[in-house]
Image 1 (cartoon, rainbow, N blue to C red):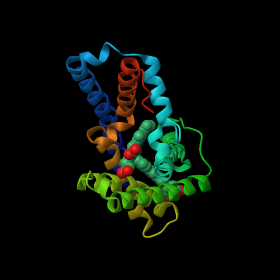
Image 2 (cartoon, rainbow, N blue to C red; image 1 turned 120 degrees about the vertical axis):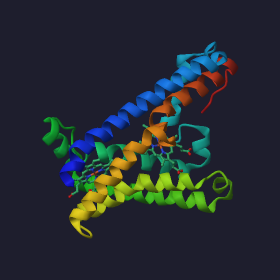
Image 3 (tube, rainbow, N blue to C red; image 1 turned 120 degrees about the horizontal axis):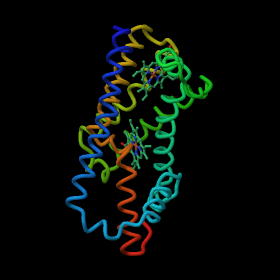
Length: 216
Ligand code: HEM
Ligand code: HEM
């Protein structure tokens, strides 16, 4: 099972993840060129890049400054979400075994700390969705499910690393939950990992290029 999941299954997962994101992007670009002509006559890359920039730095936008704790938690979640899977020593060993290449590795204690921080931030965001009426009304069961599915590889990875529970089972659950998440990204709102940059750029030049107003 382990060899299947880290062998052929992993190839399929990465093919779906990358192929799915590219296809979705190509489809949306095609649709936008057909339907959003009116946007393009004010396309302005400077406003577009500025809009992206102020939304990817902590408290860079007015909306984030108005909800500083929430903004902090979203950043904590995303920093760990990107850094741990990419720079974890155990993952890099697997890359090295498979392709002979690897990325720089974070010390295990740092990766472990970031994992715990991410789980904390995720629970905060989950509870916030439940207790704040104005957010709850916008939240569907699928939104809760996606947030939980995002946390699952981190919870199982943490348990495997600390050998909590039965190690082989935990490792399998970890790999499975990681693969499910990677497959879901292109087909759900988690596709924002790529689409975010396009939406922000569009809002940036629609507000800036057309109305000379900041969108951050
Ligand atoms: C899909 C294939 C994956 C494989 C084969 C894999 C494999 C592993 C292995 C072998 C470990 C170390 C367990 C130990 O120390 O014994 C680990 C830990 C971990 N992995 Fe993965 N992983 C995968 C995907 C993911 C994904 C997609 C994420 C996150 C989105 C993730 C996050 C983590 C975390 C957070 C830890 C534990 C870090 C810690 O607390 O020290 N993994 N993984
Ligand atoms: C570099 C790429 C990414 C960027 C720029 C980004 C940006 C964002 C932004 C702006 C939000 C909305 C925060 C708000 O409600 O104001 C968000 C939410 C979220 N992102 Fe990302 N994201 C990225 C990658 C990812 C990835 C790879 C995942 C998961 C696999 C992910 C999972 C989430 C989740 C679960 C939420 C919702 C949190 C909640 O329920 O409140 N993001 N992201």
